Image (cartoon, rainbow over all chains, first blue to last red; front, side, top):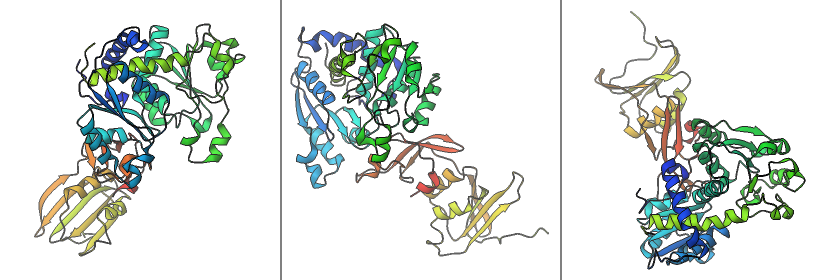
Length: 309
Length: 150
């Protein structure tokens, strides 16, 4: 399967076979991501890391992945020091980064920014989140986490909880989980329901997502609980945010009635939606999930830049 | 002899079989009355074999392919008749293209195609009748296509 030079913009650009290939390659990367094995697969390669929006995990794990593979990273995590502040177009910034590096990772507040970047760059472009749009590498690491923790994705009862309207990770994830035949339940406040176009896509893939606002009932037979933060920055209206923040709280009392092997995931950062007492339970896999960003991004960087393990 | 509701034209374009009620949107696409240099006749809610329809006749003007694509988006069943010296010189059904470039703006205000970037808006057509389109950049599907035509 050939990935060299391929852009990673949306999970929908990939077939199930291609996703399986990436996940298998990420599994091979695990000892290298942990540092117990070492191979400079991308020695001499340069990655442009263009973060027009704040990020902790995505940026750090891309940096870590590139360094583990022996490559170097240039770029910025705050656009205030760049020519964008002077009014430069994204297209021009991309043309420049393209001439300085072998691959480009971009996070941008506008939906579709990574797709535009891919039009102007010869080097492969990896979307690290575009506004409320797509976040394919998060989706891949989420799939990787479910697959490694549950051994399979198909037929798992998976709850997507929280901000399903503005949360960018859940849209891609709902699509990908439908592709794998997972049993989906969407739990959210009424004003933050999954957009119809996402639900329709899930149905086109043969899934039959259920809707509820009752988490206590839904959690009883769930295998995976995927929690998202209600993000203040995505709300056009502060009043709307104040009405729904704090609707769902995951604590040990709620987990009394759940399956023993339920796993709880979260793309992080969390604020108040998962209580710290849950961290020490065997249900909590969100920090492992955050680590999984490294092997998955190592696999992607290596594949698009033609690195051989 | 059957009386014509609107007169024949010598040269120009007749847009026929417009879904009833959509003639005003077609006029908007053709920038009428802003772009008015010749006679325009409009018939609305006309009886036909296929039910009610609208007709627009524009004298001394042959449509640009981009205008035809726009009309296809709001009246996908319509036909275009090019009239030269009272004769139908060319007649064809509008066809919704597979891709719409530079004729509709994205409904998402934070789509990169609405920022000041050197690109035209681009949509993939996901359904031709009724027309449904998906933004190439942000993947949103605008519902109000007629209002978003540039």
